[in-house]
Image (cartoon, rainbow, N blue to C red; front, side, top):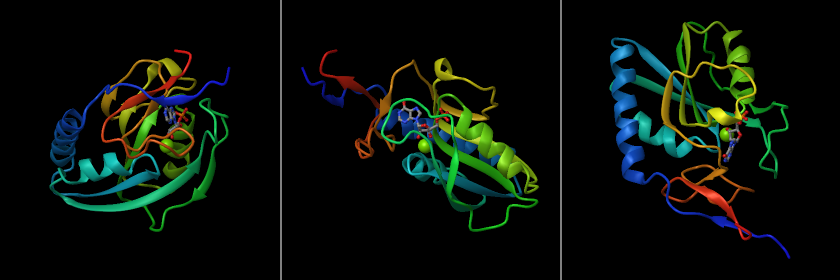
Length: 179
Ligand code: IMP
Ligand code: MG
């Protein structure tokens, strides 16, 4: 029998995501009072989350993006990180917050953190929509976490499976036809 996939039920709805983004946006505003921050969105999964967060940061805030390769067409990490698109602006002496969709193995962010740290930012933090601690293969400190989730392959709200389901306005998981 051929196994097919679809998105499962709603795990976290849009309202909860937006409220959490507001809390984190306010926290960032407090912590960086009187300073500027640069949000570095990791394409493509983080764009919906970044757009929620930024609306709640009441500071001079800038945006840039990076694109890194991770999974290809699989649900398991290859463990290899490749930079597809680098930053457009220098980050020396800047307050940088990497905005990511999900921390799973932690390999992507551990690599990115080290890579960007080498450019001498004033401070470098990580803000993720989701944290999946069960998948962790390397230690990584995450500063702002939207939601901690169980060990499922997540889709929706920017997260994809084979580039699909990014448009779901809620967080769901990948369900196989034999489940
Ligand atoms: P990590 O390097 O294993 O932490 O994974 C980082 C990247 O893998 C994330 O930015 C996602 O793009 C992708 N990823 C990890 N887990 C999931 C998932 O459950 N659903 C969709 N993408 C995922
Ligand atoms: Mg990603």
